[in-house]
Image (cartoon, rainbow, N blue to C red; front, top):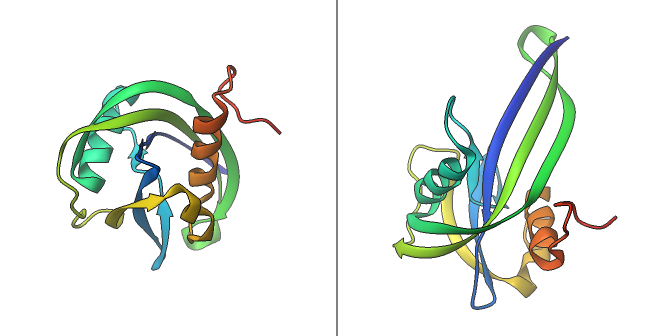
Length: 148
């Protein structure tokens, strides 16, 4: 079985009771997610989150803290019926907007970005990353993992 790892960095940006999200297009099905994405080879994760937030939302951000790490492992079917054992590691940062203007990504993995009231987030079609990031943001667990 082929093994594939991916390291990514994501931002939890909360301002005035609203959460900044990007709409990810997954096989044609849109879901809201935290702005962020995969590290390029040799890139520092801190630089990854700064780059990804700007690419997906138009905003420049400042990292104000490290919230934790999300690790997940799953298998998928690849071309020609091969099974791939995937391991994703996501570093979760707290960030605040310091500049730029809200805009949509063109030609990327997301098609829009928006602020959402925290109370409205549970009703959104969203990735599990959103709930994980908000749990870290609310709980501030010392070990970087939300409570069970």
